[in-house]
Length: 296
Image 1 (cartoon, rainbow, N blue to C red):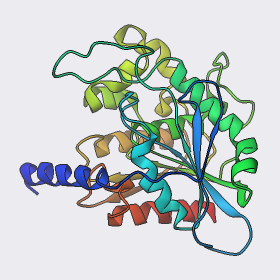
Image 2 (image 1 turned 60 degrees about the vertical axis):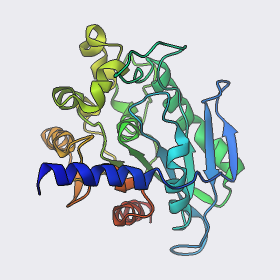
Image 3 (image 1 turned 90 degrees about the vertical axis):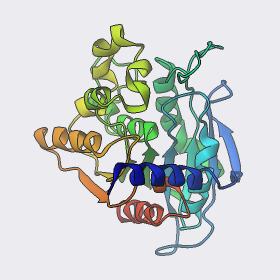
């Protein structure tokens, strides 16, 4: 397909994904004192699968770890999953710079905040069991699937790999997080390849504090270096993704294979970056099915 056609379709896909009005959660609970340390909870709208407790889907939103992009843009996706019968936890976390930072014209805001972004995701996952018991008593925490889109896909893969972090990492856990699996959607899953492709304007390097800290911090943050995890993992990737190209997902899957782990990769033809979280797109139904296969 001609590049101009793919580019035009990508614009239309993004507009469609962001056209849905935000969906308010049923409950919002805090896991810390910062305003961004909150989780939105959505109760299942229907009964799916066998009766009794329902699986829990934990959502980590994308947006290149940049402050302007918060969890609100994935609330239609969270609601879509709730309407498929899942209990849903939509996690917010700190992004961007700690204070107001001038953004030169033609550039993007700073991506991520070290170590705060990682502190928050770890704290949210650690607090989740108690918060779920309060907010979603119908959820079965033993059937938890972690999902995330783009930068959130990176955070989902990272959160599932905390038990294989370097020994001196403050986020390291003594055992794997109890998950049924991870479904990472167009994740920024390999920082080296993402850097070569200048994904999101070099956001991964910014997340780790810039060029001078990148190699030092990468072993603590790059999912491609945190393998094998022993946790069932599926990547869902649009073949026509111009934001996080297919090569990034392929690099992670290759790294997993070299580490002795099989990672599923579902490639969707004629699909770009945003249909994966767009309830109006067929790709979003594919995502829900991938989650269901792990959850049930």
